[in-house]
Length: 412
Image (cartoon, rainbow, N blue to C red; front, side, top):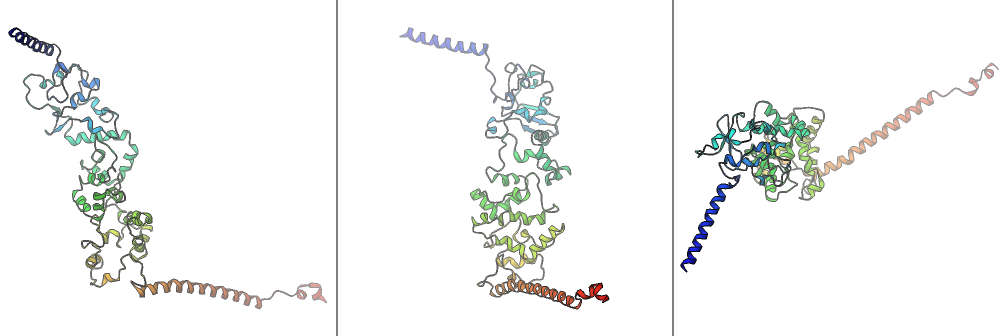
């Protein structure tokens, strides 16, 4: 029994000794997650072999810019799942052919990264990226690579509000990467809420207001594809805001894109008269005719003057600017001296009916027949008068007789 135990102990010792020997003779490759790679494990430059993940799959990898701030250099391949861009790192990071890997011809990482292999390194792996002033400089540099494939989109944004802000010196005006992301680039409309959430990164106060509106609530609750989001009103690449010269007049068409669509409005029990009656009243006719005439400054009320901009509510909501109790205040934005009875003259976008407004209904219908009848009578009167004048002139100037016109007969 003692010999058996001694034999087992001897085998176990030989097994451990063998593992130790193999470990020393055949060092294991460094895993991407290890914070401090070893020189022996990275014998050749990963920038020549194209092994970007040799370093960038390390979650502890940091880069330090000229301003002293750091940015994570970690890339998770799972971020690319479902992305529309899968052509490889250098299709976008083309600048990295040279920098920050100027010594890419070197065959050992220790040439550039000696601080990681001195044996006493205890801190985080931080690479000096002093060629860039800060993180924003890197983002703007990478953003320019989008131009290689999306030239038509770059042409569109030349007339964008965001581009104008960028050209004025604001480096943090939205660019491609800010809206579309970097590695996880997917369709900006999937899910539908993604557009508004994306814009909220810069326009949080506007987004908060929109989220509580009738449009925003329907979008967040149902991800309704029919609900307008930021891009429906302001555009996506050609972004226009309220300071744009034609935005005020064009806003009628923006609302009409939905509210004049009978099939769309029937889905929600909304009459297209909401839009048509505006165009038929004094405000709508004036704005529409002024816009068609090329006028820029239009002072008459448009849709959002009464209903709000981002805070649009149902007319049944007590917080709505067109709720009956709030109408006087809404009208006073233009008609400062009006009293409480002034809004009662407004038909709330409904055509007058015998039940709701019998007098106005009769007047409207009376003129529908009266005006054509009067115009028709005038046409008949003018036609008869013209015919009579022609007949009178013919009688006063009859044509010459046959006898008088024959010279032989006149000589006899």
